[in-house]
Length: 346
Image (cartoon, rainbow, N blue to C red; front, side, top):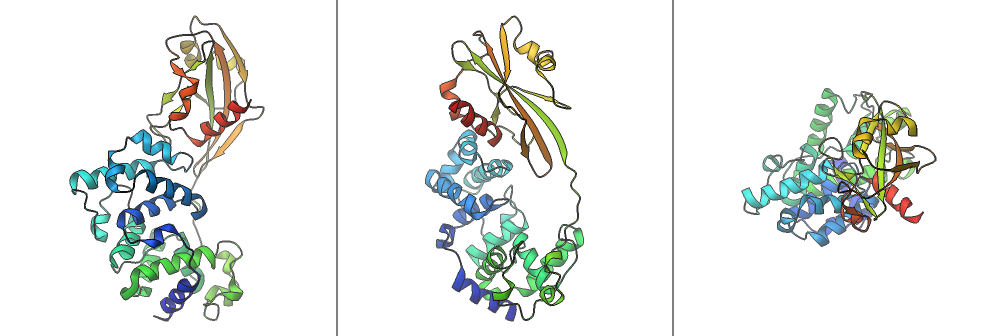
């Protein structure tokens, strides 16, 4: 228990004052954990506070429209988290009569909740003896014990989970889990860990062997795909435009301007001869101008998007029925939101 005792003592003296640490309400803990997946605390804080203000309980979240949820989530990325959050809120209200799942096994039945999130909620809210293993925990354990097993391999996932379980103090499982995660976030950081002041530095294997920068190990499996997006930003003479709802992909159910995806960058002449452009502006007078001088590059974990925004001025048509004054009420990807901020100022 020495490992746990040292980290818990450090945690109680050094933990950050975060709003979700002021409660053990499972709804709030669930909300914070979903928001903080793939998101830094400093970025996620504002979103957590917004969601709690708009949806103080699971009932308000369940009764909201998906568009309301996505709009509030806008800019946070990984939008499947928001869709799963909303789906699970409705499941809790409609199937569980508003009673939040109170065990690791039951929590796993919520859409978007995996081992880590279920362990976090179960241990923090119900003191269930189940260890969390996230990026911070992987890093602390890999460095302290000098483990070179890739953390994203099948063997690595099992090995680190088992190790985390053996180190867990079941009497204070929630505090222990938060201590290890906080320690990884603030002391045993990815870059420039504070080894000099680390309370575990005497017994840290990677510090002794001078291999801190080599751990944890992660297999490189990801192949980045390049995609080329051409957005048609319609501006009619009566100040109307058109936007479309996405029905697939990473930005499912978010809105965007009509999109023409190509295999490489294209010029204006190629753009106006695409099938989609010709169908959208058939029998209409148009003038086309590229808004951005250079391609906008939007990097995601598995793909890089190279985007051009084409301003298409045209006559009025029944096809274009969205007032520009209403455009901001629709949830859009950050790529579109950034464009709207820049386009508005021009």
